[in-house]
Amino acid sequence: MAGDVLDPATLAAVRAHLDAARRVCVLTGAGMSAESGIPTFRDAATGLWSTFDPAQLASEEGFRADPQRVWDWYAERRAGVRAAQPHAGHLALAAFGRRRPGVLTLVTQNVDDLHQRAGWPETIRLHGDILADRWLEPCPRGLACDPATASAGRPPRCTECGNLVRPAVVWFGETLPERALDAAERAARACDVMLVVGTSGAVWPAAGLAHVARRAGAQVAIVNPDASEIDDQAHWVLRGTAAGVLPRLLDTLGRPPS
Ligand code: OAD
Image 1 (cartoon, rainbow, N blue to C red):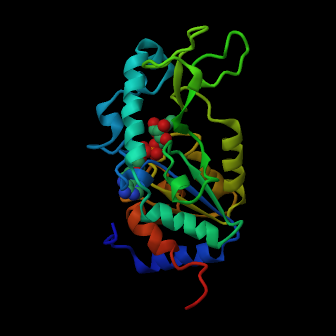
Image 2 (cartoon, rainbow, N blue to C red; image 1 turned 180 degrees about the vertical axis):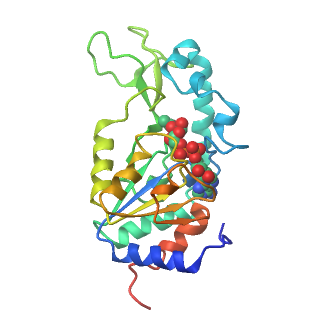
Image 3 (cartoon, helix red, strand yellow; image 1 turned 90 degrees about the horizontal axis):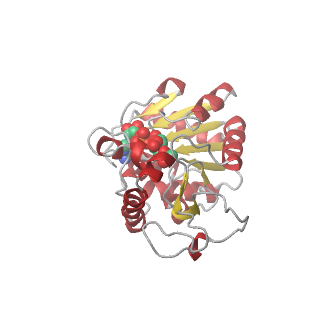
């Protein structure tokens, strides 16, 4: 919140490093979208995994066991994402990137499109796109059909071979998209400052990006109201929320003095 009480010296130190940085890599997690009304996964009371079983809802085995249940759960989450709006933190990041061409690489674990809608279309998505579909199986006839051609259904299905449509997100046990992960690792190795916002740091390889950046000599700052599993990688921890802290960190950087 705007009222987060931040240590002024820490805030000033992180701002100074961001201001001087030639390359900034920002890694965001579910906490980035929390103030837009999209639930996180691991927050004790409100996180999705406190109510739902990821093995049933976020794995290929779970989908095969009950495709309709999984499809309907994602349909609800998709509706939540479509109704959500980017907040001041998403806007501050995109505006910072535009003011400093060539400086920002924004990497997200989030499957929503709030960074893109806030004005940073080049956001690297490590865990896919909840609003997109893909086929469950490779086409047995080698055809590259668009999942949009599938027959209506929950989930839709190919009228020729029966292949099911699934959300284009990375499920547990699946590998991350190679190009996205490569680009994220390159950015982590090359940055002067890594800013980690709203992630528990519990899921790898995304959490490892903070380690990569630190080992390569970057300054690492974390924005999170609570402790995370990668706090030990940080030179600074800002205990506050994404919408509250990011504008205070970024809004006046790179603006000509008034
Ligand atoms: P988690 O739910 O594990 O962690 C959310 C983090 O956000 C926690 O550390 C919270 O303290 C913090 N948080 C909560 N509200 C916040 C706010 N307003 N501002 C800033 N931080 C806040 O989410 P992730 O770390 O993103 O995987 O989880 C990683 C992956 O696990 C997700 O991408 C998802 C999930 O299973 C896939 O979808 C493949």
